Image 1: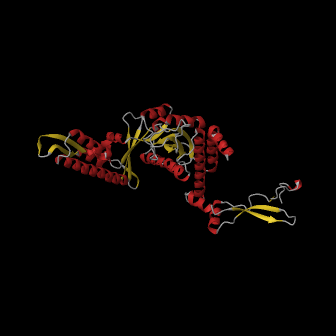
Image 2: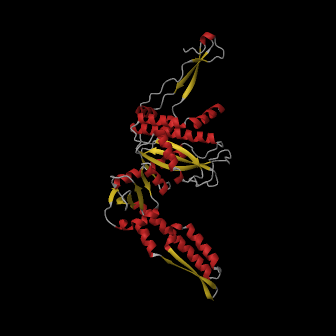
Image 3: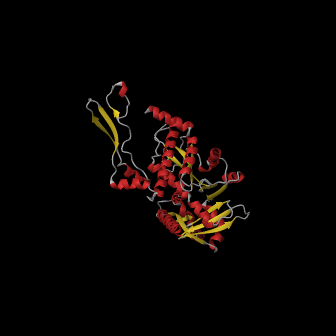
Amino acid sequence: MPQKIHSVGRISHSNPRRAEKHLRSRLGELFPLEFDLLLYDVTSTYFEGECAANPKAQRGYSRDKRPDCKQVCIALVVTHEGVPFGYEVFAGNRHDAKTLEDIVTAMEKKYGRAQRVWVFDRGVVSEENLKYLREHDGRYLVGTPRIQLRRFEQELLGQGWSEVVPGVEVKLVNSPDGTETFVLAKSRDRAAKEQAMHQRFVDRIEAGLKTIAAAASSGRLKEAEPAGRRIGRLLGKNSRGAGCFDVEVKRLDPPQGRAKLSVTWLRRSDWQEWSRLSEGCYLLRTNLSGRGPEELWKMYMHLMDAEAAFRTHKHELVLRPIYHQKEKRVDAHILVCFLAYVLWKTLERWMEGAGLGTAPRPLLSALSGLKSMDVILGTDEGREIGLRCVSQPEQDLAVLLYRLGIAPPSRLLPPRWLDLDPPAALKDSPM
């Protein structure tokens, strides 16, 4: 066992890039894959232990909601079919936007420069990253921070929308300098969800303000400074609805009974109007030309394949947590998970081609019914022969194997003598 672990460590240190190239070539032979559209996303996985021997183990923004643990960040590149193209491991405190240049450089070094389209979400977007891609003749289609929707208020009010799927409409808007194109999108279901969320936060804030105002009117809250802190905490906990209120704290001079403060608030009509207009809307940004809004929107929606890849890594392939402490062993763990995901996607595509859906887990559970066993037979010479046999699959499993074009062997190994010291002439001789 120690030798096996050591060999995996050597693989992670010296051969993963060669393995990526081999996998890309082999997968291209097995399936009709396209590598002109690449989806890029970043996730994190945390450690159990201090990881003092791993300089990449740092505390940072945890997607696993474990800020108490050190972590590493993993950047994954997949095709729009979700087939893995490559990955990189970064320190756990590395910001997503600071990884793009490294990942693009790494992909170009391994596979050469090409007119690829990079698709990533707003967490990776920065003006520096987009400038870098433009300077390298790179093409991109990216999510945009929500605050930029304000620039397109008139377009949100205007006509010219087209329905790309039921409940989702899109609209194309050119940038003033003509170098980029923006895609406005609005979703009916997303609008209903955001409206309910905003209303929940607004109701919480108003209930909290009533409590603070009651404390002030009863004389229990006497100073403006602690009142301001309570209001600040309330608005901070419900930030998605904080813009709806203008809150005023005034000292009463003279006091009105026991009350020395008054807490009043007004709802901002401009915030409410903008919320109703922008709910369910989002903005995409690209330097691609000659593409319609429907095509661009569908291209961006493929980013969910990268998010699905991370879910598979973490839940099905046990990427998290990591118990290794040394950097090479951590790299080996991530490499094994990456290779396992390649096998997972290969099985998924294989199943899809056989008309068996795209969920490998039930198939793997069914395959667990296929077992091997050792059969020991005696001979007239007093010696024993061992046979490694394969069980016959049940009917349901036999149908699955037939659909996949798999014919299980009846034996895994040739017959072998089992006595410890057979005659030299009979050693390792198959029957």
